[in-house]
Each structure stands twice: as structure tokens, then as C-alpha cells.
Length: 336
Image 1 (cartoon, helix red, strand yellow):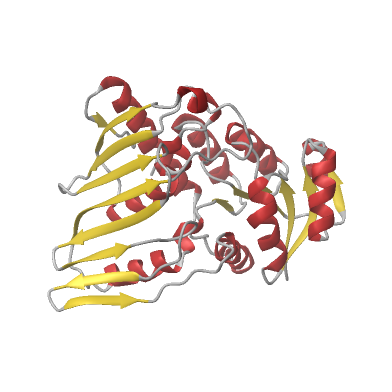
Image 2 (cartoon, one colour; image 1 turned 180 degrees about the horizontal axis):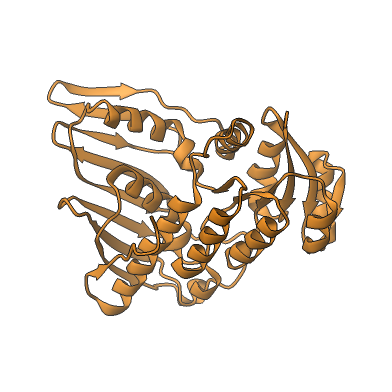
């Protein structure tokens, strides 16, 4: 295989602004078709991207399109079923986040992926950001010692380009949508948490229905490490920050994609060092580059279904803690 050919499923906001252009711009990547229930929308995006094939029926697209890989960019509630159909059709798979509505259905997809020989991935473009990669290298070299904790804040005004009802059953929880990136990054740095404590409130029910717009989450790890996540979709302005505490120093991200593209600060006893970390302006492009390279060389992509499923199991525990008001364990029985 000299290149990866794609069927893009979903022609909405994220497909139009980032995914579609990245599929076209990445080297050794070629977009063959666009599929969307809205034929006019699919035609418009296909024309914009130069894709020769347009479909409104997903089953027909899987049967007729010669693409080796499918990118699922549809609403969250459809991710698992459409991904399973792609695998059944023998297609490689890259699915938007969050992977599913809960850990149980993500485990069902993970089992199917493990039984296939297809290359699978779930979008977390922040894992391919320069901020993440630089920090991962700092930690591997032990430059801030052993991780003991940290915090992250994700504050952004109300955002709902699809105008779907903001209900948890549709996967539109702020913790699932915004928190996916943070939770995934944190468990890749710290390992799997053993328990979580969380509280959340819906302050704008006319906008959010039963979805939280402010929340606080505490993750506790087996070695005693603690990480706090704060979410705020109630106030104007944006904050997208993260800080890691180590025994010999700290790492601070003041802003990172998509809301900023700032440096990484390393703080040790010797002082503070500013490290340049500028990610490509199309945040999805480095992730799709990684996937294409993985598929062509036979290695695993950076963003795995295992990692995405782990994130969903942690999220399940967060929601249990919100409901119970107690520290809730995270179960790992079905994830190796």
C-alpha cells in the first residue's frame, strides 16, 4: 500500500474545518468519498475537498467505495455502531472522540477490533501536539523527577455548532466532550487511576438540559498521586491550562490547541525555562499523519482504542461519583 485512501463519514463542523482538509493535505493520504445523511452537505464538502464519490447511505458507501480506511466524524451516539460496521466491511478505522456513550459499548468495539486485523484509532489530536510530545520527552528523561500530581482547567463559553439537545444520553456531556482529551492525557502520563471523586452542576438548564456546565473531578492513582480537573462552560473567556507536579520540578502548559498554541514552561530549582512548542494550525493534521504512517509501516498509532476505552471507563466512574457523592472505584477487569 503506497498510500491510504479514505471514506469520510459525516460532513459536519469538525469534518469541514479540520478532518477533511487534513485527510487531503497529509502526504500519502487520498480522500475518495464523503458520506452524510444530508446529500447537499456531502456534495458541498466533497466538492470543496476534491473527493470524487458522494454517498447518503452508509452501507452502500462501505460496499461501493474502494477506500481502505474510514474516518467516522458523526455524532457521538453513532460512533460505536458505525465503527463496528466499518470493521465488518474490512475497513481500517479512525473514529472521532469520545469513542462511545459508555465504557460497556466501547469494550464491545474494542473486542471486535482485537479480533480483526484492521488498524484502529480514536481521535485525540492533543496527544500529537508539540506540547504533549515535548512533555512526554521531559518525563522520560526524568527532568522533573517522579510525577506526584497536577491539575488542568478547561473553561470555555457555550459551544454547540450542531445545535443538538445537550443531553447526556446523546454523549454531549461537557465531561465527555471536553474532558475526553484531559482524562486521556492524564492516564497516559500517570497510569490508570484507582478511584475518582466528582461533583457537577447544571446552571443553565435552558442550554444544557441534563448536562453539567461546571464540574470538579479528582483522580486518585495507586501510588497516592492526585490530579484535579476543573470544567467551566458557564463563563465568558477561555482557559485551557495544565500543570504537572514532579518531585524535582513542574511542567506548565499555559495554552494549547485548540484554544492556544503557547510554549511549555519547565520549572525546577535552577529556575524557569521556556520551551517552544508550536503545533500545526490544523490540530488534526499531525494525528492523521501519525495514523497514515502507522498504517503504511505496520506499527500501532499513538491514539489507540485501548486508550480511548480506558478514558470512557474513567468517565463512567466520574458519573457514578457525581450521582453517589462518594469516591468511586474504576474497574479495569476487561481491559488488559
